[in-house]
Length: 370
Image (cartoon, rainbow, N blue to C red; front, side, top):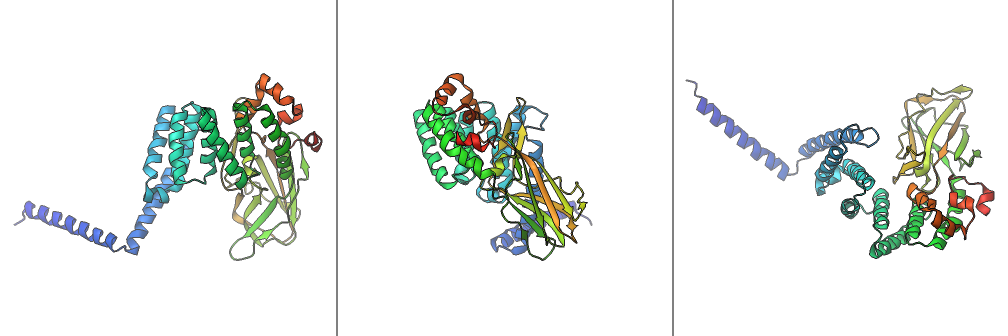
């Protein structure tokens, strides 16, 4: 005779045995259970990545407070020791977006607290470092400015050519009302950075399947205009038979200033379909603001990649042309500090007007000499 109570008891016993079995497998560190866990984690990471794309300020249509609250939830969820390591990208992206939102709304104390925690977890993340320096300088206390100056000196030794270092140095000197210090940065440091942008770029072609990566010699700009427009060109005489990926390496840390890219390729006299050469997989991100200025997000990897889906087959020489624009070397905050008429006049006692403007990253050599 069927007894529901016996069925319930059997089900409960099965659940207990299953729980004990899973616990034993975890205790023995079974490879297959960790493989299952890894795939679940990766699926979760991808789902969070898709959600974070929709939470970027540029395309978000909902309430700003709700956006920031959700970013905070994702950041907290992903920052634990084990899960935080596996879900590093969602944690990093959520932290960057939340800090950006807090800074835009003037909530420096909240941004500072989050950044200090983020830097303790990942002290070499340039986005965190630069945002933290910006918070310290904006806070403006004597202790904060001293700490910012010490950090800038440390990072100047590590990445002396990075434009953001000099933007933050200009901003710090402006907060200290040190017009001569600002002038020294503009006069002595930035012209060298401008010169570095003009040369030693390099292109790479990655083959489909096994094969040797083909790279160009260091390339200089064919043309570089004062408004930041530039052109690079190189011909690969013996390219791979099928190319799956194209990579462009800028000199130093300058890709953070690269915008409006266009890549064209020709196999012999035939141009490659523009659909293949239209999407970068790089880590740079720049956009125009409503006032015409340019906002640039800072990332760590200087390389820019273009995946050529389906591959590009070559039976002749391959010519590659890259055109685009370079954003101003000084970031928006530094340029705003120089826009104050009174402080600007003090700086002009030490340097000429063209150097103070620096509206272009490609100021002519004649202006560099001034």
